[in-house]
Length: 443
Ligand SMILES: Cc1cc2nc3c(=O)[nH]c(=O)nc-3n(C[C@H](O)[C@H](O)[C@H](O)COP(=O)(O)OP(=O)(O)OC[C@H]3O[C@@H](n4cnc5c(N)ncnc54)[C@H](O)[C@@H]3O)c2cc1C
Image (cartoon, rainbow, N blue to C red; front, top):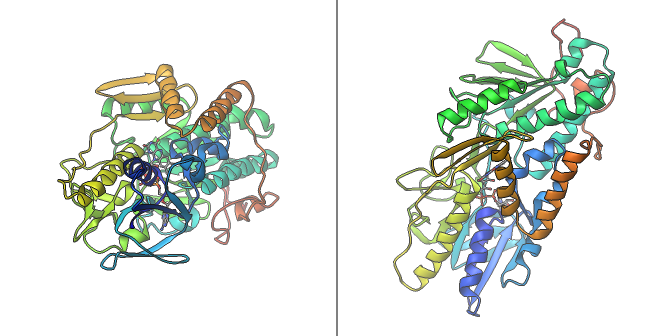
């Protein structure tokens, strides 16, 4: 019996295992084992909609056992701790697992670029749990702002800073705008729309890198007219509880500071032998194999493939690489020539909140309402399973007809900012210095 292990049930890992299953379905000599620390696939393109209460968190995840259905592979919820490549063995939570071929697809984690205080005081936005926590933080800030009589304190509570002007940061800030201006400013009687401030800080001269400069400029204009401040060529040099230091000299106070500025390979990938790129990804050849270990493939956000063009860290790349790695295992075992992965852009779709998107596909650039409808159709189609498609379509329809939901359902964590105006709220890092408003009073 030969065993193929796939580590990580994200976009790349799931595509690889389903592809392998189709190829080896009739081969009783092959054991397919999928390992992942989460037992679901998270549909990250809809994660920004959790923060704005537009989509229900459970609707954007699909359990691996549902995806598997009657397919012939095993799944174990395990964290892979280390790869012993020379002995073809994985160290996992519950012991060790041997393999004959391995596909590593553990995704990425957030990179804070050693910015002082960023890890402690910024909201990270990569997992479902973080999305749910941020949603509740936003609502909790509104709850406190609603009954705060100090106008300066209220303005700080209602200031939201998103660090990073990539597609994640831009989609997130536009969702937050929809919730804050479209719902909070109407339902919270103590909040005036003019007090809400949404700011994007981007270190590069432009937002939405990867999209054409004309479309990026158009998106920026749209953000501006809908009340979002975008500051480019702006470097965050320090983060403290409730404040961001910009370019080493300006302090911006805020109720929530969200970091979407960079990603890095997981610790598992960084511990692999061989070369790594500047963000820790394993450098693999064009066939996606790890140097010196032809039976180990690395795909998706974890891989830096040696190709003519660097592939962006997006789901279609992980999916395509999952297919190539799966086929290359079969080629390897049949002593056939291996396939190379070549990046070909499938276009870029960025939602700018309700009713507006920018889309770039096959050289065509479109923006506006029809681009937004197209964005919705594509993402609905890409969701795995009819049940999830119906649930998300239902959420979107209800979101158009009814107001958003602002119930806080978890016990909030402590944070000084909101405690100062009343009750116990949510937030990372709660033990830093007291807050000072623009007028100098502690809040
Ligand atoms: C907020 C957000 C929005 C995004 N929006 C888009 C978008 O609109 N379009 C797009 O194309 N891309 C988008 N992306 C990027 C996209 O999600 C990634 O490029 C894609 O998920 C990478 O796929 P992957 O298979 O490499 O990793 P992932 O899909 O991240 O899967 C990795 C899996 O491995 C598991 N894992 C991690 N470490 C271990 C371990 N040690 N042991 C076992 N299991 C482990 C993880 O839990 C996860 O299940 C977005 C990402 C984020 C965070």
